[in-house]
Image (cartoon, rainbow, N blue to C red; front, side):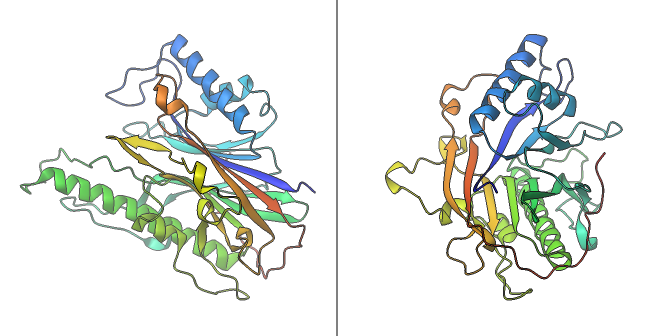
Length: 337
């Protein structure tokens, strides 16, 4: 059995095919720019050398396949993802997952908010009933007969949500636009937390949630995803824990972790959250987070083909203890093809 597992999350920053307009205010990649982009991403993946990687800002699965071809360590890895809806008004970046570990059939996306959840935004007549970007869920076998739930997410950004439909008469339109973004991010977080709770009720397994949360770990939306802590099954805590804060090898003298820079502010907004089974302080631990690493040197040089996010790598040491939990059958809701 593999003793150390490596999980990573990576916002690649707008991976799209050359000549394809992915945002109205962005010029499509030329063939040369595209080659630089996919070569750089491939190099980062090989540097990570992670068993499972969650990716954000993927506009094209074909482009991601081009990336994997250029890697040394992921040419045979399993890729799970989906393209944006071609009939939509505009392209929307999606998430994806690369795994060198076995992935169970039935990986799924959640587009609609669960449990009939809907939120009304200020100045908007129609309620929000969908995630800003779909959530990806897969079951991955980290050891023989030891599956875990893995979720990849990308919550709403802090970019103000302006509206051009003439319905916004508030004197502070910028403030209202920022409030809409906050509400949407909170709605994404609540929807994701609901998904996690539903899955736990169906089939309790160890869990890892990773992605771009567009907020720091102490922010309310991130805390919503992590949960307040209940004991629904066999005394197992249903909270998630920020891997950085529970790592057993944290060195305060080299604490330089950040994944995003905006207006001179250095923040960590990309996170890997783990369930109690990977918390070394828990009696239910089957493994422990030993180290969290941030790969962010490229952010200093600001090359056009590089990402504006740092990469997060988490190392988990399995204890070799068998998993004991009460589960019932349950499957994700929308199979991927």
